[in-house]
Amino acid sequence: MIYKANIRPAWVVLVMLILFTLAFTLVKISDTKQITVNSQAQQEKPVKVDLTRFKNAEDNEVCLNCHGQSKYIYEKPGSQKTITKRMYSELVMDRDLFYASNHREFKCTDCHSEDYATFPHDNNLRMEAIATCIDCHGGDEKYAQFKFEQIESEFQASVHSEKHSEDFTCWMCHDAHSYKINARNTENLKETITYDNQICLNCHGDFKNYELLTSKLKPNILQKHEWLPNQASHFTHVRCIECHTANKDTLVVAHHVVAKNQAVRKCESCHSKNSILYASLYKYQVSEKLQNKGVILGMLMGGTTSVGPDVSNRLNVISLVIFGFTVLLILIHAGLRIKK
Ligand code: HEC
Ligand code: HEC
Ligand code: HEC
Ligand code: HEC
Ligand code: HEC
Ligand code: HEC
Ligand code: HEC
Image (cartoon, rainbow, N blue to C red; front, side, top):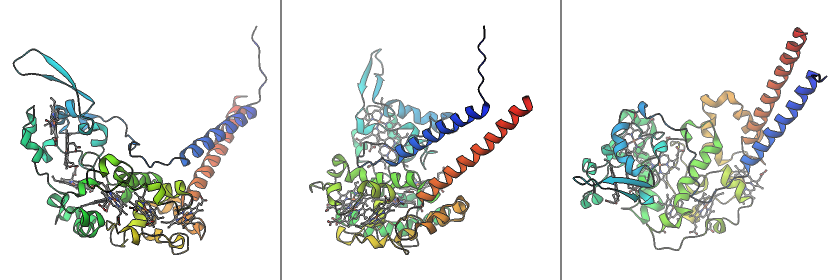
């Protein structure tokens, strides 16, 4: 015997609606509670790459067979023996991040010596000089929009460059194998903030990298910012560079990191109608590309107490979802009616 339930479609829809709203709220809550002052937290990984899309992928695999994971298998020429060895963790690089980076079309040996093709590598290769950003991008019309020369001179004036002129290079912040432009094209402010802050935290949150450059004791970042209330919220809503660089309107990303006693400390610098953030963090959002997404509205709503466009973004999503559901509801209802 078949039990025939007498459930009205409206009930089904109602239960679905409640469940969905609940799930949506939970997701939203969980993604606002994150703060990372820890460089172990890696950049978000892109989806597995399709290697056939990259013309140099096959060549690169030769290197990545050893440098792409935590162990490598090596067959001594002339002998049948193979050995399996652990790759030094600092020499392991992430394939997926590489093929999502700005320089994804490169061959490893465009930047590294061809002599790396032989293994064991020649010891002298350690001393190889690698081209700098300016070597390739300087004076090139194609990249004029980035203003490499201005970035270079801001960098020269920064605390990092002044204190460590030779050994502190652009590569220190722009990881050779994963750097990709972010803020310029951002559609997700939060991801950009995380990405940009991670660049600083690679050293200021990780003693291993910091001590390569200085014998100074590592300052405790959280303790040094104790004067700032809601630290977790601030570090996920603003970038380190907002407070630590002399911002000039002519660059998308200011590079002049100033001495600590010149860092922004006044709350009103941001929490006011003429917040400095409009000229830095939020300026991409004023760009036409993003204008019809409601962020401008958010900035106006920001007013004096809350600066972020985040709030209105969330409201936008919620109202879209509600709208979508109303339409769905009507459609289902109509569909069932017609069936009857
Ligand atoms: C058979 C495994 C193997 C292959 C293939 C291989 N490497 Fe290596 N590579 C290593 C090991 C092990 C080290 C660390 C020991 C050393 O420096 O020789 C290393 C070190 C390096 C270093 C760092 C040197 C330093 O200490 O500064 C670079 C750069 C490098 N490899 C690039 C490459 C490139 C580029 C390729 C491809 C053209 C390549 N490797 C292919 C195993 C390999
Ligand atoms: C755009 C230039 C560029 C390309 C392309 C490039 N590298 Fe590098 N690589 C560098 C630079 C610069 C460094 C030194 C970083 C530093 O000194 O901090 C480096 C360092 C390394 C190291 C030493 C460990 C480290 O991270 O410092 C290894 C191993 C390495 N590269 C392997 C590779 C392999 C394998 C590929 C190809 C998949 C590759 N590189 C492609 C620029 C490049
Ligand atoms: C060996 C030469 C070389 C070096 C060194 C180099 N680049 Fe590039 N870079 C290129 C080339 C060539 C492209 C274009 C790649 C393409 O179109 O696929 C590129 C692309 C880029 C892009 C993307 C441009 C766009 O319009 O999408 C940025 C940003 C960039 N590089 C920044 C840097 C920075 C920052 C450094 C130093 C940390 C650097 N590059 C070092 C050659 C280089
Ligand atoms: C102290 C860290 C640091 C150093 C050193 C550094 N940068 Fe940057 N750079 C950043 C950060 C953070 C961003 C923002 C990344 C993003 O969101 O696109 C950035 C962005 C960029 C961009 C993209 C700007 C745009 O208009 O989209 C370029 C180009 C660039 N840097 C070049 C350089 C060059 C050239 C050097 C060396 C002269 C250098 N950087 C040194 C931290 C650094
Ligand atoms: C709201 C503004 C603000 C933000 C955001 C901010 N800082 Fe600071 N930071 C300051 C000020 C102001 C000081 C000076 C504190 C002092 O001297 O007591 C400082 C001090 C520092 C120092 C010097 C510590 C020392 O005494 O040697 C470092 C390094 C630093 N910040 C790094 C960072 C990094 C990395 C981030 C991002 C994760 C960041 N800051 C975010 C305002 C800020
Ligand atoms: C490659 C490692 C590294 C990266 C990446 C890095 N820093 Fe630093 N930073 C240092 C070191 C080392 C010092 C200490 C300099 C010294 O010897 O006094 C320092 C010092 C500072 C200071 C203190 C200057 C003072 O007055 O004492 C500030 C502020 C700072 N960094 C901010 C930043 C910001 C903001 C970023 C990201 C845009 C960043 N750093 C990225 C290594 C790094
Ligand atoms: C570099 C800019 C900047 C500076 C300087 C700054 N704030 Fe903020 N603050 C922000 C941003 C952005 C947010 C996130 C606003 C949002 O949630 O929309 C925030 C959030 C807050 C919040 C939490 C609001 C909430 O609803 O979560 C408080 C409280 C706060 N700030 C107080 C202060 C005080 C007090 C100072 C000075 C000691 C200060 N801020 C300095 C940018 C700044």
